[in-house]
Length: 368
Image (tube, one colour):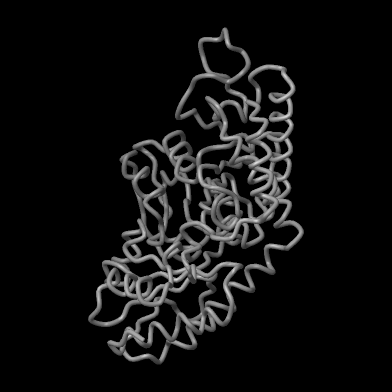
């Protein structure tokens, strides 16, 4: 099997991650729920993971909040900070995890291409935030976050960043990039497991909780605690997920995120060079833009789902076809679906050649 669907969830997980999760499940303590040995050990793991995340994203340790993933993170942030009277600037590259929460708030929305020039042109008197993804989950295009962050800070706008496709691949400094709120997920570039993610907050930003309940402290108070991180962490934390992040962050620190990014970019660039002249193949990349290891394409006259199915059934190449929960990208390119190849650190140049050969064969109507 050749797995090239890493944008959905990364295939490779470090052995240290697998081992640590297995070990935790033999001693499944619940942090903040008692002072027994396992509970205290779990609390230590949570704290150490917060420390690692604060170092990784260059942010305030006290404002690193765990969630179930980037979708919950974005819902908490948007529902807590954006009202119907507000205006938000976002891009056509956004995932429904951004779009649907915004639509639900009935706020004003301006859609742009993510460039600083277009963002500036969209600003209104009631603009409250600029909310963009760092990397498109469909095309892999990288947005210029540092210059956007500087503009937002100078103009007193909240800069909210969705790092679903960039965290673990592209170095991010909340301080240098002037990011107010960063939402992340653990099972993609961070190489953890599904069901864990979080929010990192800079500055004096108060986000009302989406849910309230048990916090492990101040249990006689009728209102949920307001102090981070507990303010946004009602209920039992996903300890296996947090354990996976603790170990994967150690792995990423040793390997270097930039090394993995360069590897995946080289694979994607080589794939593009091998398929760009195949008749009928359309690659959704624009000259002058920077991309991660994602390549989306279509073959003229063929449904994307059919192409993806052929790749899987005939060549054991696992891709993803469809709208990828990002409808505005398809409106922009005039498509309804695409076949997405998303390369990961486990992929090789030989696999790239096999993927290219399979696309050529399918485009020519062959099955060999």
